[in-house]
Length: 148
Image (cartoon, rainbow, N blue to C red; front, side, top):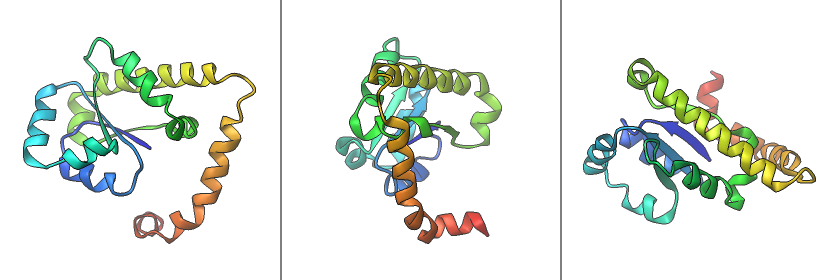
């Protein structure tokens, strides 16, 4: 799974959804969700659960994140969490807000991991999956571009 702050480039979101099982898009301006959804059709990805739109200004966002992060195919990878910022615009004008979203995610991830119990093999399972996926990551074109 991948977490991104800002839906600004909906085409990027749609293309990333092809390569990730789950994509969490965090935004503080509901109008930007509306604008992005009016330019690019994400209905298939939203209905299938590949893309989750998270309004960080929603009063029950903690509960929403706990439910989403507690799903089995996501909880296995929680220790690899990182928040990515969609573009420079968000870094420049929304820095405090995306830091808030990042802290909110980290807080809820800690709760989910704590609830799994101390005998959980989450970290071993996570790194096991990472090691299993290294060959396909090295063969993929985007990863090869990063190396060059």
